[in-house]
Amino acid sequence: MTRHEALQLLEQTLEMEPCTLVGNERLRDLPGWDSMSTLAFISLVDKKARTPLSGARVARCKTVAELLELLGIPPAERAA
Image (cartoon, rainbow, N blue to C red; front, top):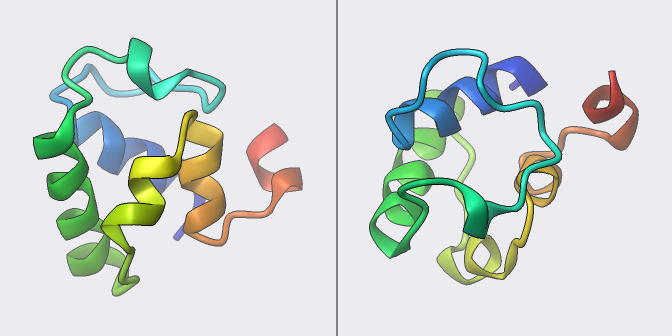
């Protein structure tokens, strides 16, 4: 999964306009980021990328960048 695809999934989960997220946002500042959206994001990632994520690991993430790391997106790609 690419950085762009991961950001699109998160935007879709949060019902945000496309290309709204850039990757440096704090999750708690995103409208709609809560336990239900966390589960929805985990489900979408599992379905679209076939990447199982632990709810506990996602819940510990504080930023969008940390979510990207869980998906295996390297720091160099995040910075691009």
